[in-house]
Image 1 (cartoon, rainbow over the protein chains, first blue to last red):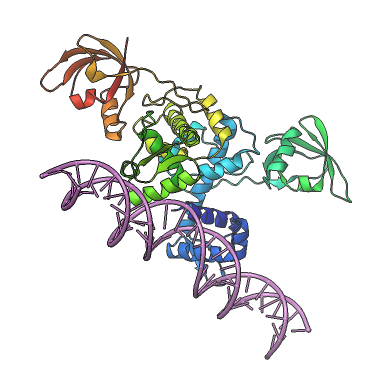
Image 2: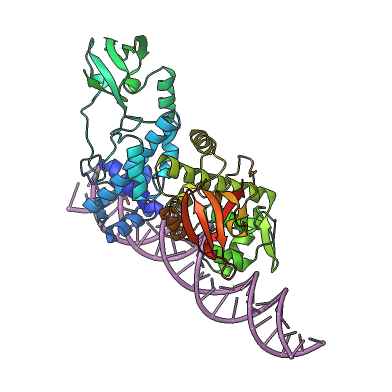
Length: 217
Length: 217
DNA sequence: ATAAATTTTTAGACTAGACTAAAAATAGTT
DNA sequence: AACTATTTTTAGTCTAGTCTAAAAATTTAT
């Protein structure tokens, strides 16, 4: 498996959104910042290798074999992110790019040992689940902060759009995984809200609250 | 810098043997398990980029810039080896291949943090020195076990040819970095020797003793 | 239902890096 | 000094992955 092949599989994994949905050539190309013609070429190649189910003009989705391969790459990506944050003290906004490289290191033994070294974590620093060796993920039911009623108390469980700037902003405010959030007020006209987070009162826009996953206590 | 370019620089680094010696196209090709014609192509390219001083039919050596780049790759390789052995409990014979991949990860910050995490080691698991950020290496004076006189007491400081099978053999015998070695007998006809290593008496061939570096106490 | 707009695929070209085979330069031998 | 043997370089081909431009299929709109 080449690096490019791995990146296509991973993109399909993320785009199919656990729904087994068909992904269009353009979607895939956009995600990988490439051209649709390149995506077509690769899809045909991956179809040949039985990693992808692809029908001309209809789109593509991962085969079970392809899904397994993809989940292994995601597993590696997220384990390395944990390593970078927990062991090397990187900020959660700095690790994605480096993990993009580390995820392609080929050594099954390394993955297992790294997993053990990290204490077999189940989520990465952004709250995304880490697939196990077989590709299975434990999905924790989480809701958007935006949907929580006033007075409700929740715990921050994940970040939807792990954009680096957004993550930097959050950590500047002291917002991190596991923070306790209580919704104090919700403005009906712009869906902004006032929250109490780890004791501190904060005013939060709709953009923010729709990108934060919480778990009800 | 592509992966191939990095591998050529690294090969030149190892072949020039700290002597700043000219390396021939064939030597380089052999080291990289490729053909001389491919090496020529790459040398011309690296010369264009001022990373290598190359004159047709004469051979090549690293420029100061190229040497710096190469030493950074070697630094990364050896730091990752320490990580794999010290933190993930790999055997010293298992780490070279994985480090060959990890050495190409691009992130200066990562290297610094890894270095610190590992306690700024000065040698890798085989006793080879780890270059610092500027490419400088601390060379410890070490001699071959084969050259030690009878009765002399030494400490094992490094392995010359870090071949996986050889390393496996050594660790099976309980031979490791830091082991105390006393030469008990030397046979003049085949240069084999009897040694005492960490209390245990061992018979050792010339091949072995010429691949082990020791430091006199 | 047919025309227009969009999406997707094909065809052909490019680059990096490798290869083979042939040509050129260097080194070794007499 | 000249002739052979070896090494090195050049020339041309191949593959993976990308691209652009054009053709084909599909979707949308009238």
